[in-house]
Figure (cartoon, rainbow, N blue to C red):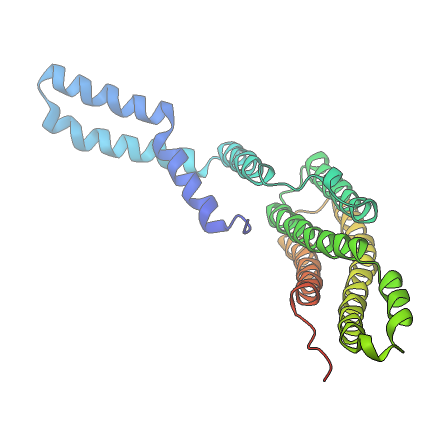
Length: 255
């Protein structure tokens, strides 16, 4: 899910101001009063002005803005969590890395919440980062399962048995091609392990930076931290693309 933009937040604030129960009831009361008193035509413009003033007051109210932001975050988080990847469905080494990412996600959100930091950009980037991590974990799981089903050591052993037999030339060629593909898959899976371990360390650094600037509301801090998480997300995406290529691209048989 893409990050929650300022434009979307502004639209939510406008909708909240226009649909605020107090503001709607105030408008309704004035219009009904105008109808009952037979002066609706005169009351209508006054009611519109009063309603506009009330809506503007709600729009610019900081407490209301915080409530809207929290409500939208909860709504988006529920939507995101419906499609979350269950770590228990993954192989142990991949599960460990995903659980590490989720633990750091919770730590970052806890740091934002406890320090009451207005870092919505960081929170949104963390959402996107975790989605990228899960996508990479899914692809890594495909590689892991394929390598488990056809262990390179077993293929290598079978190749040694048949490579000197002239009657098994085609089988030898097929095994060599399979071994080449499996080797590429092993390399990509190992890259996933190595890159994920490094990225998790850097994500922990992001959390440390959040804690260290908890007394500051400087927007530049938020933008820098959001950019840090965004950079990590892009690195995870590159790893996922590499794994996808290793899994999907067939190896041309030797001629």
